[in-house]
Image (cartoon, rainbow, N blue to C red; front, side, top):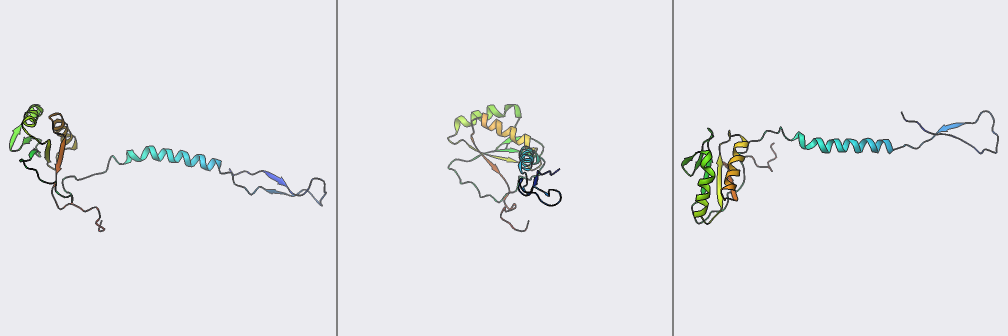
Length: 157
C-alpha cells in the first residue's frame, strides 16, 4: 500500500562502479491519512447523537434546590401512575384539561404551575400534559421531584 518514488543517488554526469544505487523516498504521504480521518470524523459526528437515545434515566429523584415560594397558592397538576390527570386534588379528563387550565389562568396572576408525575409514567405522557399546560396559558412550568437523588458531583459513582 505505501509506495514511494525511487530516487537515484549521485550525479547524472559521474559514473559509479556497478549499477546505479537506488533508495526509497523517506517521506510519508499524509493526504490519504487525512482523508480517512475526516471521513471517520464525519461518521462519528453523525452517529454520536443517535447513540444517546437508549440511555436509561430515572427523572423523579434529584438533588436540585426547591423553587422559591409565591404569594398565592401554587397550582399543582399531577399525573398519577395510572395516567390520571389531576388539578390540585380534582380529577380532570384529558379532553377537558386545556379548557379548565384556560379558565384557571384567567383568574390567576401567576403563570407558574407545578407538574408532578409518577416515575412510572411514560415520558411522552408527561410531555403531552406539559403541552396542554402551555396551551392553557401556563408558560412557567416547574417539575416537582423527590429530594435525595444522586448528586452529580458525587465521586462514588
